[in-house]
Image 1 (tube, rainbow, N blue to C red):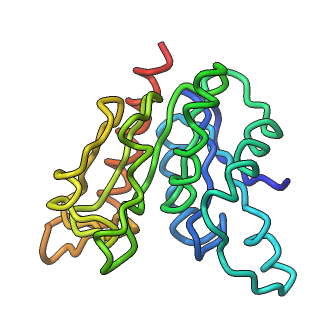
Image 2 (image 1 turned 60 degrees about the horizontal axis):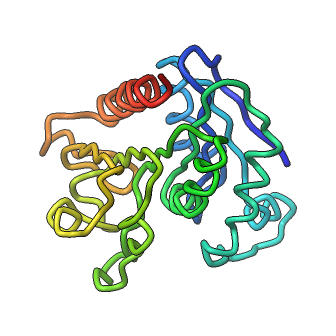
Amino acid sequence: MNFLRDGEAKVATILLAHGAGAPMDSASMNATARVLAEAGLAVARFEFPYMAARRDGQRKPPPKAETLIGEYRAAVETLGAKGPLLIGGKSMGGRVASMVADELHGEGRIAGLVCLGYPFHPPTKPAQLRTAHLETLRTPTLIVHGTRDEFGTREEVTGYRLSPSIELLWLEDGDHDLKPRKSVSGFSAADHLKTMAGAVAEFARRISR
């Protein structure tokens, strides 16, 4: 299993998985890793096998998130991080991490979970919720989400039953990549990334004590 690594673990290490359609070194993932490293986190990124196969020309579609749980756990074991470890990812990557989080947290393997743009439901299909396991999640969790994310707007998400272990950080006018329209919100993508990284670092410090 290949990893991309950024930064030193001044605060904690965070393991991130990519979204359904973009690799671990997409522009969005690169920018995310950079600001998290600047905030004092050691960042490790990995790819699920279907995405890694695309590098060899095999156009495999994303499998069901549930089938990737074993791959995420294998990534944690292969990484072998020392010190506090958080797991998470972008969109689908965060969703898969959320499915294995309680097991790993119960084993003392991780300190918490961070989801960047959680896919609460498919776009235009708000009735197809992906939140059942989030109602009983015990792992300390931070979800960073844009208010106009088509996978779950602020108006929709505030009506969901979510575990009290979940904290939500809302980024004004952010889309599924957390990017705002500056002309509307007054914020730039860089502003939101900096806010996200600061919040993740503060969350990591708090739950790692």
